[in-house]
Amino acid sequence: MTPAPVWTPPGPALLFCPADRPERYGKAAERADVVIVDLEDAVAPESRPAAREALRASALDPEHTIVRVNPVGSDDHDADLAALADTDYRCVMLAKTESAAQVADVHSATGAAVLALVETPLGVIRAAEIAAAPGCSGMMWGAEDLLAAMGGSTSRFSDVEAGGPRVAGEYRDVPRHARAQVALAAAAFGRWAVDSVHLDIADEAGQRAEALDAVALGFVGTACIHPSQVAVVRQSYAPDDDEVAWARKVLAAAESNQGVFQLDGRMVDGPVFRQAEATMRRAAAVTT
Image (cartoon, rainbow, N blue to C red):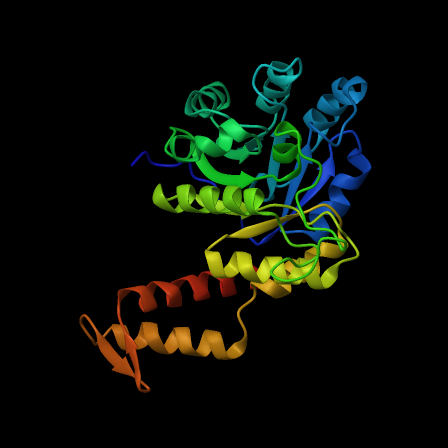
């Protein structure tokens, strides 16, 4: 397994911020655990040169900052990497990642940890090789670009389609498959995974349900497109007092027990121990 560059999200709520709005950088940093300074979709092509200069002039905490750059082969990609090289930021999100070679090249050019954003059909098909790439630190997926590339119209079921097993607002099968592919690939190669954005800002219940599901699947965080989503994500990732108490009890008991043992009438083995460790990591992340 290829060692990943050293950078991990310090908390579960990652907030996108347009790179051409430097007056918002600090506000985003105050609200979220990680700021994703976006040089891609959030910025009009004609505004990207100014956005890169704003990035160069910024002074956010590198431990809490990711820079999203345009895809390999696009007109802006090389200029984005050049701007990143003039900063102290250590994690770069590569939009529309489609191969291990792209990840390796970006890492080689910048020395930064690469968060591979998988959001095209080819990227989803190659998720495992992307996760295994030198320089890959984490994985994220995106639904809307994926559906657009497939000639589709929407990633989620509508109210009209709801009924039976279909629930309005939930992902269709292909986005769910992409999400699973990315989560599995990241786990297989020891990378962390970030869940995609919830576009319906007013749908707090839907945001919470997705974030809770992301926690259950092992995602380390969820990307947000609006500051109001940050609190919902943080609350969803935070284990409750009972979960923390149980995890502490498991870890303490494991110090004096080898292999499988019983605790309060429950069997504790390797998977339960690892789940307890994950609970404590989540608790630490949301309180830091």
